Image 1: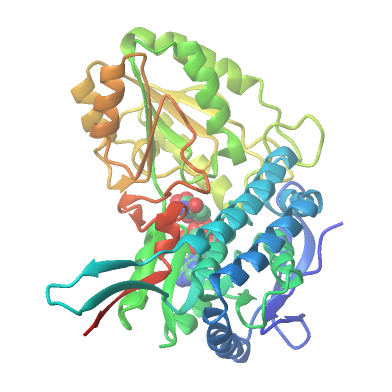
Image 2: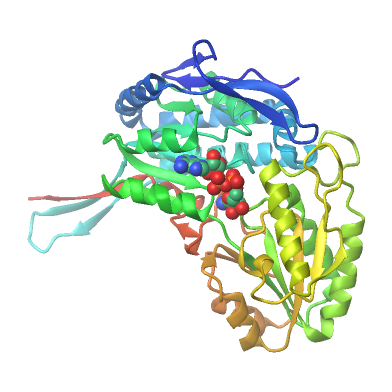
Length: 475
Ligand code: NAD
């Protein structure tokens, strides 16, 4: 029912024979699902060589023909989405309905970049001197090394793979060792779509060893990473040694500002549903709730009612609305956030503890009356915790919302057009949802500012991230 795991290098699948590896564990049962082989140093060198060779082939393939392969891969992901979603739910924990949406969105992303790759236009700038043609061209950056985490096992890799391939780059992806199966299945779709050998390579291993090896290679010209801020800084430093381009999609701590003129109950329903998606293990998950004081009680009551109705369970079981956390590290982290909040006077409106003896289940939790300098209000929780606090004025809440070093996503709700415009402008964040949570689509830029990183994935910006600009002055 799970899938066959392997490395994909130079167009061939490699298994565990003669390689070290690790067990992939189902977070709902803590039982092993399969054995994942780790790439040896020789495997990584082979991947680098293959990617260099693949780049030479792929960059000379026309954008028109590249699009055909990408479109076919998207079609295969769509055809196989139920199987891929089942694998994802088993290894990651998210409920099947969410896994299914993720896989279908993965296909949308690949398809969108297939199209956008054909629209990567240059321009002609009139020369100052007669007879001079000045051309601005876009060229693929070269071999890409990409690193993706465990929370979105196909969507995050697809953002990197599809953009890189659409731009004409080749790529070596190290996906998460904790959730490799769905990504393996997605890579199979690219292989079956006729992608030439070496253009896409998939490896696994000890993350720090793999990244050091790949980023130490001169031929890698770009790194794209999604994950935590400390690892992002480390990889940026490694990339700087050989001046590789970098896209860093790192953690955040997204404020939600609910003004007194918004309907508190309607907003509570919308934002609570969004908050507990993937058990809160989402980089743009709303994580700090500021509610204007006249609406505070109504909002907290309705939000808490919603949370109490969440049904925890195995993601593949019917009726489950929230699965386990993806790994034991998140469980420990949740306990530490809750303990700190309680020690600082925070009140637990619901939840607050582990939910079962087996599986990494943690109750969806609402915390109130917690001070702004507590751990939950200053560090990214990356889990099912919702701290809700009141505020008085616009200026006060803007200062509190902007007070952290992160700037990935932010949300605000108001019925006033003037307030909507003002808060959209005031929040320091790469993405802002005003009366909306729809801030992540294939065609719009996705990325953070401040310590949440730099560069965008998605949108035309996501394609440009894999292209160099070249100026040609032709006399
Ligand atoms: P972590 O920092 O150990 O790992 C995050 C990801 O980076 C993992 O996929 C890991 O395999 C990879 N990684 C770690 N060290 C690496 C290295 N030297 N080179 C290459 N890749 C490396 O943290 P974690 O325990 O997996 O998750 C904890 C925190 O990470 C969360 O609290 C959250 O802040 C952040 N996170 C963010 C995202 C996101 O979507 N931005 C996703 C997952 C985790």
